Each structure stands twice: as C-alpha cells, then as structure tokens.
Image (cartoon, rainbow, N blue to C red; front, side, top):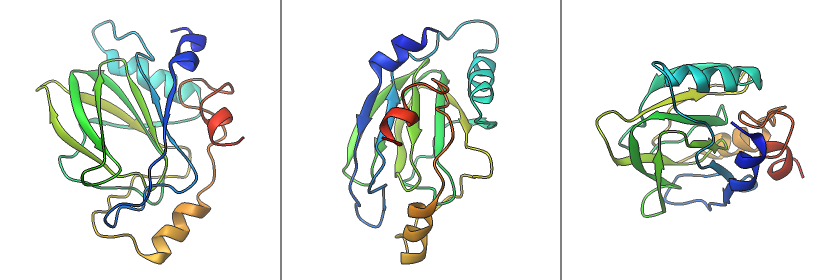
Amino acid sequence: MKHTDAANALQTLMLKANGGIPNNPTLPVLIYPAALDVTGADPASLFERTFAANGWPPQWRYGVFTYHHYHTRGHEVLGVYAGKARLMLGGPNAHVIEVKAGDVLLLPAGTGHCNLGSSNDFRVVGAYPPGQEGDINRDPATPAQIAQIAHLPFPHTDPVLGNDGGVVEHWRS
C-alpha cells in the first residue's frame, strides 16, 4: 500500500449526538477507501501487521454488530479484510456508508455504528490504541460517559498512515 494513496483518498465525517448515541463532538470519523490491497490466504494478517506497526495492537476478528452501539473507553479502527457491508454511522437514521474488503474506518470514541446488511463473508479486524478498549454501549449515554469520551487520550499515531496524515492531521490539528 502506498501511504500517499490512502492519505489522498481519506474522507472525514463529523457526526452530532443522535438519539442517545453521543458520537464525538470534536473528532471526525476517518474513512480510508481501499487503504490496503487484500491479497493472500490470510488478508486479515495484513491489517493486523499494519495496525500493530503503527501502534494499534489488533484485538479481534469478527463482523460488526447488527444493532446500534458505541464505545466510551476506546477509539476503534476497523479493517475490512473480507466481503462488503452497509454500515450506519451515527445512530438511528444517520449516515449510511458501504464498505468493502480493503477499506478502513477509524471511529472516534462515542461513534454509533451498526451493520445494516452484509455479505456472508464480511469480516473486519478491530484494534484500539494501547490502554483503550471497545466497551459495548447500547443505552443512551450518561453525563459520565460523555465526560469519559471527551477526556480519552488521542492516539499517538494513525493506524494506517503512522506518523503522517489521518489522526495527526484531522484529530490533532
């Protein structure tokens, strides 16, 4: 993968609080279309190696839940290594995106996400910055959870681009 290609293709999406889903009031979702070439017998390992090399230890391989949820204790990166899906970001009746193998999504803490439908082979690698985790929240955010999201540390590096672009450009500037 050429980092400049991923940086040039990078898209941002700001979301407002929606129906109890807090989203993130200051950080945009980062979308990296076709960030990695999905090849070989174990394409998930390519995402895991890339995320790990950039300081985001991979945590799991799975899909995306079919219910709206968000995390308060971690920023989450999702690397699509197989299949395709329609995901809703931001809570009920919010922003729908289509993702396919090779795409990466970086969801700041608080971002609602839900799988609206996917191919049978849809799978992602999930990772969080060191010391953070993907707690599952479905109920409306409490003031304490909103405060936790606001005080969560920025990751030191971008999971795809490392010290360039992405987090460095859109979250720290």
